[in-house]
Image (cartoon, rainbow, N blue to C red; front, side, top):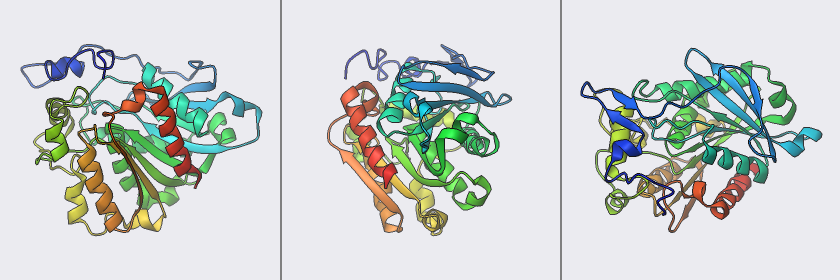
Length: 327
């Protein structure tokens, strides 16, 4: 991995890597505060796509970007709807306006093809979990309740998937569990499955891959520990269900009943260069044991979020998602 991917070594300066400075009172100071639109606007970041920014809840500073293949604007076809939750460890000042996220979403939109609604949400520690879950659930109701001409005309609401990267994968998982039992209230939006890409999970006990990659240049243990310390409810440890899904999976026999009743499928994607890989495989095996329709795509090499930085790998990822969505 080049220095251009991680210009600040998280093993040397984890707070600087996360874009924050810790204060003595437990709060943080952000080194950069991202701009967010508060009015509907149309933008043109990529010639192959048409984008539109929409405010979901101005009181919570939450918004979304609708991304549509430009070529579909001249057709009658409706495309699958992918609701995307970005990463950032719940605390990094990353928005859907970040260039690598724009490229990620534009590639998915073109290759699948699909309509993507990329959702921004509140950060921790100013708004600790479950605030991000709340915001992303609210985004689904916004899609259902707010008539948007682009979505109404071009999105197939009956074929919706929740996709998340890193902490966004964690969000997609928990949002999916929340809404699996209330499908009737989301119609005409019909969720068909979850796509969990390099999902950020954790636990008090370290896994072999976390220890093997403890000083990883993208997601070392010291950085992920800070993410959980600032992201979880105050007083919680890393075995809180928001962090460690295995705790709830083992304690709640009926956790996935609604997921199975709805016929949802789950795609889990990771690589053995990601410290999270052992946790992904553990959750994957448990989902299979519980009778959930789950597909695993685990590859060799790579690193956490590597497809963001490699155009060929990103296209390969898009094809994996395409095959999952089209079934």
